[in-house]
Image (cartoon, rainbow, N blue to C red; front, side, top):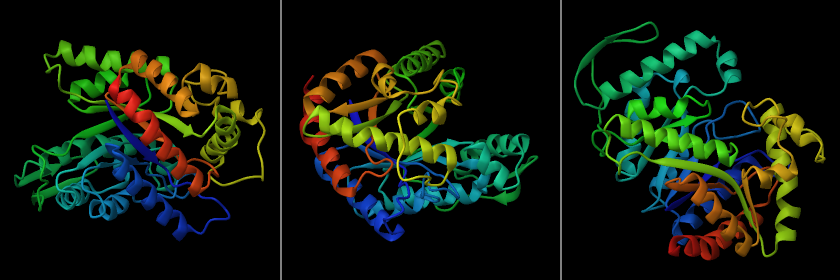
Length: 348
């Protein structure tokens, strides 16, 4: 069982952007010292929802500040990139990180397509062709390619990544049919904050499809992201976390920070547009649907064990920083999870 983090670096009006990035780097460096296994970063554009417009720059910085953590962008928004340029960038990152790069790939969110002048069909074509080009580029061959979105003549990728045949590829799956598609492509599965029951079905579908295709039982990787906040007591954890989870979803909806405070009635409104949240999230459903791990170390250990037994992920990834949580609160939560929760889960 592995453990990791997933960072958005959300904007807080009272925190300077430079400080926010310094805090993010400090948080990830702490996870390295505490024995976490990997760190993931969410690419978003033009939004307070996430200021990581280029997570690969964060990975480059952390490649020289860490020695163990695997590092990945979840996801590189492929329609926005020249795929050969991205292939070269990932190769350099893999070299700088000494073979510790994971590559997340996806289409991104529709609003970014629109802002960049891409309709749905164009974005899909750029994604599908981009995947094919990346695979060709990482073979090291010189090749020519002609497609609807991209064309190259006698081109090759230099340098080549350290990992062979290429760094592990992860796909962020939300639709019910996606896990089987991910398995057929030979990729790894990444699941966000969907209800736990959905994640369990997705991981089962992924592994069953791999088995049906004759893929090795030991191959393939399934990671599952949960909101995580650990404090000294259950009461303190819920008091701190819930308003900021609501803020996270407000930012996801509006892209900018609106209002000084939010009420619990806002949460369903912010989340009901997601098919996997029928009727929207509520404070109670954070617990009932297993989207979050909130509480004291003792409580989180109990809840996390149940989650792991239900969904059987290979890695439990925590979004520790969200909404308006302070740097001190995030560092404390990361520390409690790393020193109290992780050892208990690993021993079990």
